[in-house]
Amino acid sequence: MNAIACIDDLRRVARSRLPRVLYDYVHGGSWTESACRANVEDFRDVLLLQRVGRDVSSRSTRTRMLGQDASMPVALAPAGLTGLLYPDGEIAAARAARGMGVPFTLSTMSICSIEDIARHVGGDFWFQLYVMRDRAFVRRLVDRARDAGCPVLVLTLDLQAQGIRYRDLHNRLSVPLRITPSTLWDMATRPRWAMRLLRARRRRFGNLLDAHEGDTSMRGLAAWTQAQFDPTLSWEDVAWIRDLWPGKLVLKGITDPADARQAAHLGADGVIVSNHGGRQLDAVPSSIRMLEHVVGEVGSQLEVHLDGGVRDGQDVVRALGLGAKGVFVGRPYLYGLAATGEDGVRQCLELLRRDMDLVMAFCGVCDVTEIDRRVIFGTR
Ligand code: FNR
Image (cartoon, rainbow, N blue to C red; front, top):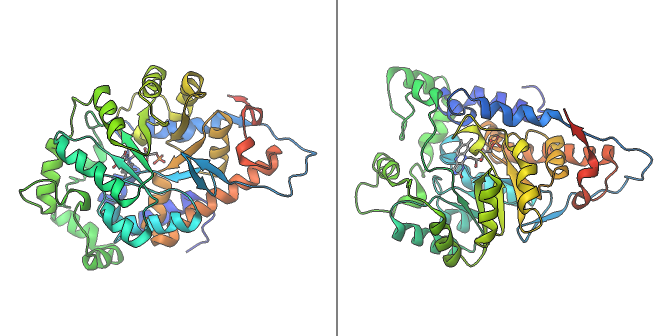
């Protein structure tokens, strides 16, 4: 294997190791995948200003995100089914994040549970919540995250319906993975992945095992979950969660400045400007294009973060220059995880830090917290 120079190298290794059905699940987006592509491509239109003649020999990427120290302004975004990409994938990713000093966010739809992460890695990870129809269960999830010691709750608001993903339909993605002659062939050509997963102890949605009385097989839990996503979710529910949750609350899936204003009004500590990595509504602008609008509206009241399309340290600096306090990455670390587990996630974070540090030198900035509009030349 060639040396890994960038995140796209990790993606290529991930593609060679994962069955196609899972690679497509991670890599793909909804409908024509235009939001997914725009998230990445629109970063290229944000041009940085190179500045010289400053002593940049001593630089720091240390910052704080939502009250937590972070070695750089990058967090791992929540992702469902991570534990199917690599055994105990959420534990591996949380370990890598902890080792690198950045926040890890556990999805409601993870394979390893809140308690698994707390037991193996400690309690200072963040938890992402989906509000389900069964509000008593949602309340229990919030209590479990609090009891585990999570300091930050990330409440995802953009799953009022599910985007259509052609790749998943073509591949007949199902949970658990359906065994057909073609998926069997797909998995047989990835023996390393198959052997690892066969040995894995955790293969069900860990957070949902106590969700209902019925069938707790993966199939039963998946069916239950499908019926549980709640299109009635409203700002009243957000106010309810705000009352329940004693720690920092971040609302994820905000792109409309008016929604951001409502988030501030309800006492959220932050928002994540996000179109779910282009996996929900496809006909939307990229996250980086919406960032400035949201920052303009609420940037002085709460922390504005961004996710979607961050693929190197230049993108992190671009987002900070346009007013983000930090960024979350999804696919980049999932590629790393699928490639080589915990090491791959660490490698992904090291690449981001390496680039960010160098870009700071080129832009004449020594302290990441001082990055502002002055590093931006303009947008194409
Ligand atoms: C996600 N995302 C996501 N978001 C969330 O709030 N809960 C979840 O369970 C998931 N699951 C999930 C699975 C996979 C495979 C992906 C790729 C993404 C969205 C995620 O948190 C984030 O918004 C995007 O991944 C950011 O875009 P990039 O960094 O992947 O371009």
